[in-house]
Image (tube, rainbow, N blue to C red):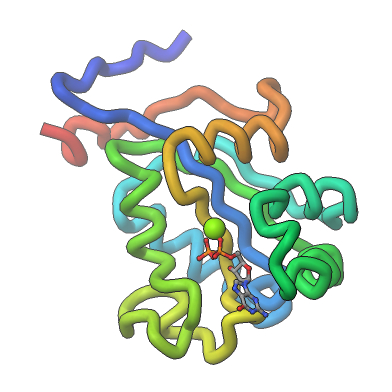
Length: 160
Ligand code: GDP
Ligand code: MG
């Protein structure tokens, strides 16, 4: 059994990220994963999926009264999606910064949406917006046994 290093004062969290059908179609899966790996976060869950309408509606339940809701569900279910869980210190907020603002036209250059997108309805990637949302989304998309508990061997070069 792997011995986990205990990180003093760390705020170890998990977040849910999904490369949307536009990101998969545009061949950006590798580039998106690369950014989180290079940052130093740990991939603990990964699967390529055809998303059902039921899952898409549950995932975006908070937006069900919005005018774009049915178009959003159509879009998320229109092609392959890469669902992921990432772990790390403060990963929820940090992953959102790496993603950038919702509308790619106003996302900062250097962010995923800022570098690769032009339209709010084709903004490449989803990321949980808070630790509580992350827990809800992880359990909605992944079974416990689909998540792998492991720690990178370079952990002491990532964390003080
Ligand atoms: P996010 O957390 O940055 O992904 O943004 P939200 O939670 O506000 O919205 C969820 C998703 O709905 C966004 O990522 C967009 O794909 C889509 N969306 C949000 N606002 C709009 C809108 O005004 N028009 C359209 N077409 N899509 C939108
Ligand atoms: Mg959101």
